Length: 294
Image (cartoon, rainbow, N blue to C red; front, side, top):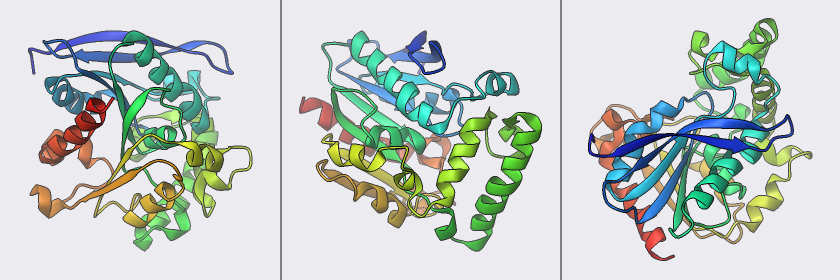
């Protein structure tokens, strides 16, 4: 992919905590791009995790924006943004990235891909005003008490909900890099995430968050992607959130490990070249088709 152009970008974020910036990258094809794709990350997942998919999308003619949520990274970053909640990633970071993309590329059709919480933000309408298509990956309405198998439910309810909250209070941030969660994240994000996980309908049960109303207003076509071996985003959990999209046409797609010739995919595998590169053409074909309809 050496022929692609990769640029550092800074994306301004108007925030309730004061203005700040997202650090990101812009991947450009060698020819003029025909559409834009903004990739919104999952919790505790670094921006670099999405570079391979971004390169594949750029090779298909997309201008691709990647970035990382505020407070995700090392302990210094997590502590510096300790007040950032999960809802701030959704309503501020995703919104800022979407607005930046639309301002940078005013004459091109826009698409977006959201992984897990990045997809939540898109389904709640925070990804921009001009989206032609939204692909979500492992985005679901997760209730900890319904997760199977029991070992994974225990890991979520006790590992995150009890132990995770306790060590976050001790450290002043969630040391995800030390406990196998991924990157370190802000304390407030961990507290809100585990609070939502305890509710039967995730953030739809939070009266301070207007998720139900926002989801019901979305009109952008959605490709809801999952895997057959993801305990966090089962088909039922994915349906539980997409069924709340009253106006948006939804296409559902579940990939199985045997279909891709691998042993497992899980919650993150669809964004790994080594695991799921064979699935990427289908995802990009769908986004390309939505952009072409613009």
